[in-house]
Length: 255
Image 1 (cartoon, one colour):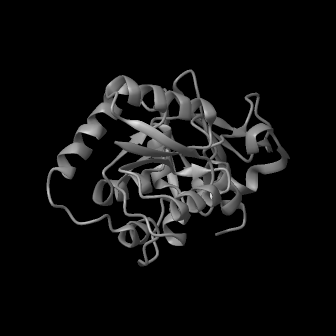
Image 2 (cartoon, rainbow, N blue to C red):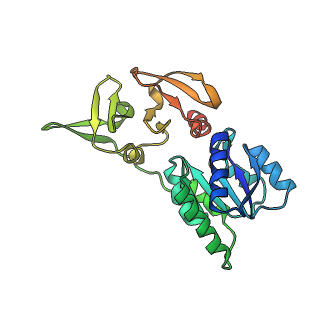
Image 3 (spheres, rainbow, N blue to C red):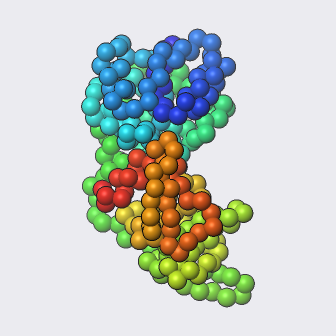
């Protein structure tokens, strides 16, 4: 079975390739593409593979742009870091999705799901529907306006708009206000992300969600990443992860 791997990190691509060989010697990665342009070019000049394994966030943008630019008939297993909206869509439209870093048992389950679907007569994937789920046309969403913070016997309310950033430290979530007040938050960073306005707040990596108004300066970093200086300052390094960098740059423009 021929597999096209769309992945812009060499280490991740090599890891997935080794796991595929470990799981099934009949699986052959016939090509690895690392961008939207190279993926579109490959698909337009080669026979469709049996399966595509594709990262969502590529250095030059979202891999969904590939499906806008060219016809894709092969089923897809998507990989993603923590995009909860995409995860909801993938459950409806794709063969499967895997959270990065991809683990061997989960990849094995995805391949088994793929084989079961291939043994049945199933319609092709509806990528147009997938894109609609990712970017739906709905009534405006109302986001949470304040948090109730508990510390010791005390309760305190904090306005969301007064928060510069959220971060995790020693497995505890904290917030930092623009007045440099730091308080623990009785929520995971995933739970915090779900209640925030994505036009104002962005999760730059697994440890940080920042308010656009908290950005003091930005610098180019290795592998298309971006290093950020925050206000108030933070004693942890704040770098936009490789997976998040393309989406982060779109977010800065207000898209």
